[in-house]
Image (cartoon, rainbow, N blue to C red):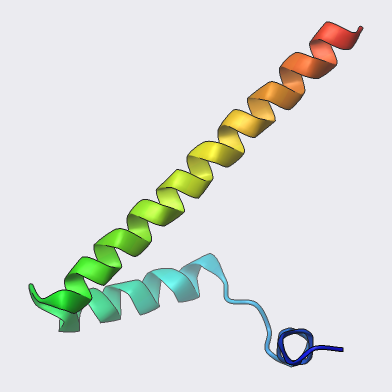
Length: 68
């Protein structure tokens, strides 16, 4: 068992609300410097992953519809 697996088993997953609160707290203290840029990039990465997931789900639906 790897260290990451051990930590994942011990630490409960964050809820969406927890993430929103943490992001709001970070934004409030970030100002306009490098931390603000990192938070912007993080949000862009999350949006890109979400877009990929949506597109992949569309492909799966199309494949299922094409198979029947």
